[in-house]
Length: 246
Image (cartoon, rainbow, N blue to C red):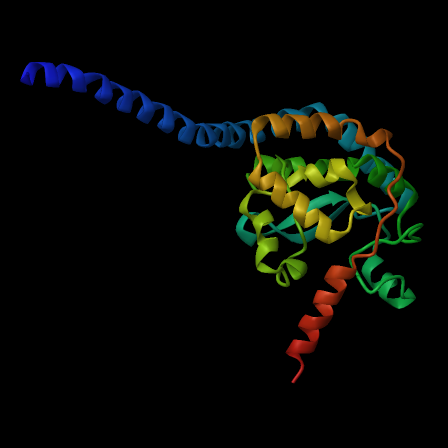
């Protein structure tokens, strides 16, 4: 009887071991996928920099001839876990765009754009519509500050006013392109962008990233988006300013 009991118990033990291995395999799959993304991002970005180097040079010359120096525009943005870094892009607006926007009362958002924004240069209008102004950010992917795909890096001033649920988008490295960018870019209100970025973070996969990259290739052929005023961040900045007053 003892021998029979031992034999009867063996299948149970075997099933438990198999189930345990399966569970562990499922648990490790996201980790393996994220490791693949972490390794592939800088490698792909490096080769893309080499591939697009003639385009980068041509754009730089065009900006110089169109509006002069500087060719690049830098701005402090929030990366993964809100760590700040200075993000580069090709300059698409006049040199004193923020000051001019405030002086002319174009918008309460000094960093936003408006329809037919007079501060956008001739070369800048084309670069913004095609998203070619973002190409210098491949350098940030090589350095590990950004990813090819992820939520767009937000201004540190706006991140300081995030609600707790908004911070979900900071759980991953920001991207050159992302789920919101292939859904509508500047014409999507910020509350909707937050929801889309949260959905991306919660449903991320290598397949989703590949789909976003392929859809990004079609973006230059879309009509120029009509930007919407960032009323949410304007109101948040107003409340934060009021709270700091004595």
